Length: 258
Image 1: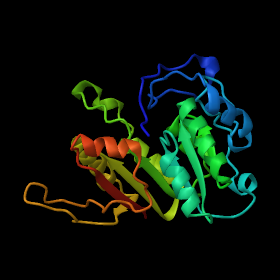
Image 2: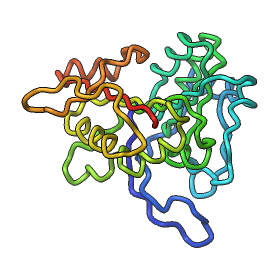
Image 3: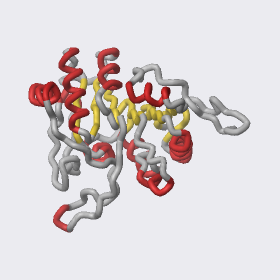
């Protein structure tokens, strides 16, 4: 479920307003084999076809995601950023048939695995998109249209020299806020304490959000607190199990759009 990161260089003038900021991933292999290739071929109707220019994860700023048209109904829309192998979003979609989900991931084999799971369960309330998350928020998503945004276990970039590559920044927080409807919820989770503290610092500093659990979990060492209980809507994924086996504490945060 990780969103990884590389730094993009500004594009030439003819590239237009694309990729002038760092993106939040490094490219992995995109080769599909066996059941993943079959799922990718068979379930293209669940893949959002995005107009590109700079790369196969860019989003044309003129493109808008029309959820009502795509899903054929009016329903709450949840965006998961870094859907990985689809464990969380597929589980949530099965448990919440009245909600629609958009899964954002740059790793094509992960999206193919998500499609495989969706096909096995016959679920139609999920769409997937291979794209850079900030571009999805600022270009694809109609402002104020999301009920929730999920960022679960983004890459922590735990080395000091790499911290600047982390996804959750003040700019990203405002991009999330713009995409959420008033009262919408931003949910975050990480198994790296320093990143958890950074996430909390970013969200607390934003005038766009209020903590749903102010002061919760406060201690003498951490008087601010504000940690959310584990989000019940997040199934226990293989990634989270790995964190537990490594004895890393899982931190959840939940903020409401003002």
